[in-house]
Amino acid sequence: MTERVITPRNRGFLFIDSHPVGCERVVNDMWQAAAPPVSVPDSAPVALIIGSSAGYGLAATVTGLARVGIRGIGISFEKAPERRTGTAGWYRTAATAELARRHGRDMVFLNGDAFSDAMKDQVAELIEQRFGGRLDYLIYSVAAPRRTDPDTGVTYASVLKPIGHAYRTKTLVFDGDGEPEVTDAEMQPAAGDDIAQTVAVMGGADWERWIGRLAARGLLADGFTTAALSYIGSTLTGEIYRQGTIGAAKTHLEQTARTLDERLGKLVGGRAVTSVNAAAVTQSSTAIPGIALYVGLLRGVLGNAMVPPVDQLAELWDQLTGARPLALDAEGRVRLDTWELDPGVQAAVAERWNAATTGTITRLADTRWFHAEVERLYGFAVPGIDYTQPVETDVPWPDLTL
Image (cartoon, rainbow, N blue to C red):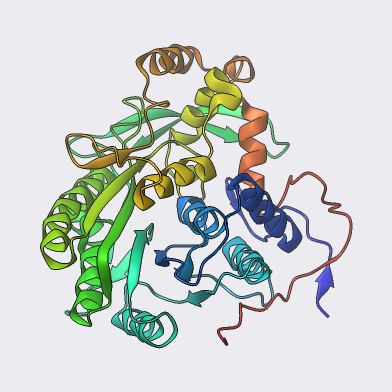
């Protein structure tokens, strides 16, 4: 037994440990929110979720299981519990697997490098041997600091930088007592091959490679559909995000979607889209200067009218499966962010952004909500959990056996 009391310890928005029971409760709550439950037939669709343990990828996995009744494979890259606890994604995956098992969904979870051809081959073998040799859906939701090209062995590193000039922005931080402060952050512009390296990691190359290898083995079902999850965001954060290096990668991802859509249409009558999701508190988004302030202000404007990731992914699954019409913009993208980018909402957020200081921030933004959402990413601040009690930290990875 490796039970112990786990308290939140953090450096900024990065927490050192995760709480297994809190992570489990978060996943259970997501499952309940993804209702209504469905009756799962023998022909339940087979789905592959790449990046299944966190953020929108987790929402895609839980919603697909609970709402659509998918079976299939989830892939993530998490650290096991050792001297420290496991990563939050490790515990969320264990909780997701248990819910899938309990509800009769045959879902396999793999832990490893989704960029590698070894992982692609392992997945292909599983599809052939366990899931009838036909894949219906692939959801691509990967945020990573680096990627090694399987063909060349070259490792690329992504960077978060503006393009063309230095960028200074307001940003939200919390002091040691959890009190919010508005400070400034300045980032130097991309230089050398920063843009190309970021595109190589976060663009569409790996997504396209996944489709190519699965297609070459004849594993794509008739009507196969794939969606890569993306973000556009506000002009308030545009210079560091959509007009920055990450934005260049997202543009490449959308170009890849158009190429894949044409190819899949000819090959299996299939389709490829990007899904533009809306702002949320995720482990990836909190690393971007200015995003914390923006999301806190957005919550201050909208309150409970903000649409959480699980509801956004429910809408995406409904469109992908035909429960609702597939609604695409002129660029071929599913737009789940229209509520965020409504002109009235953006005007209200911009007004608050301009007025935001350490002295005014608690009136303008929902900082308590934001801080609690960050803690919940790691299983803390979850209602109903007694954090003074010891919990088992040595939770095993889900078994792959039938």
